[in-house]
Image (cartoon, rainbow, N blue to C red; front, side):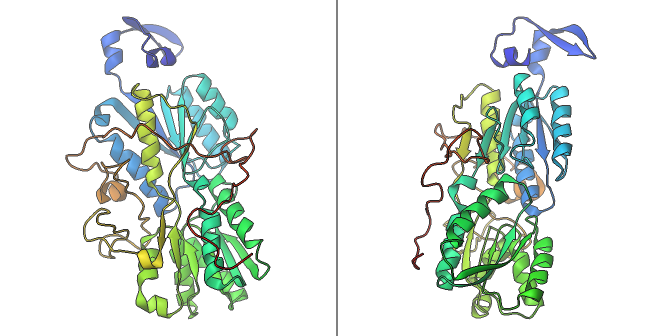
Length: 406
């Protein structure tokens, strides 16, 4: 029945089932009923996850969505079975849509498929699944791993001992990042990975795990890090070590550090790239445009652009949003762990700093339509598809060129 209503085929009367009993509901009442959308988080222990969730919450409270959608948040943790159970409950509860950060690219597939058969619309943001009926909105095929790895190789002159600070085990984001990075590092025999650890995209955990690695390898020359990278800087400062060249994602502390002459003098060099929490908002708006029959979307895998800010391009913002080319906030506005890439004037003009920090709508804002075109992501076996073949240039560099020959 849900699918029929979506297609606009319901007549003047609509059937609803409650506790297994079919009842007749007046059509006007059915039209007034809000769309039921679930926000399903798996891992939720860092600023990135909080901001991504807050963006969805803020958009859901922005007119006209505040009158058309009922949003419920569920956090299930890092156990795939817990998120499977959460999905099953949402499907049973009659969800119209589920927007989710999935913990696994494959473990959730069977449940997602059953939900699709019942008319539930699934949108994954940032992390991905290989079930073909689900939409994936992510930047992970845009090349974070390979581009940041090449940047670090260039800085180190093609040789040195490095750490790999990874994300959450088994997650598609961590896998694609690390695969891309190792594709580059393996071409340089002078690059030695002397420590590899999971930091769960969290500053505190990254600081703890990096400290352990520094105790065993105090002579490290560089660090390739995913989110939580500011914790790696703190670990080096705590140990009294000089700072080493690093790549990282988009934390405010890391970007400010890259532009800080004092930290530069201690040895910090690098580039800020990586995961934008804004992918959640883009995914949510695409889902809502489908649910409200304003869009038909053929590509199932949609690519969000990769942010790329080298040290010499870090520019502090004077206000509460990105304007005039700025890309980082002063310390009196946000904590060091704040992930800066929450704005996109083309896709998410409704958002403010308050949206990302508190999940509140921007006063006076209304939902703006998305551009008609979306960028289709390439196939990535085991990441966003299963029976598929990766393009020959899967790890092609898009942001940087090698200055050291492999």
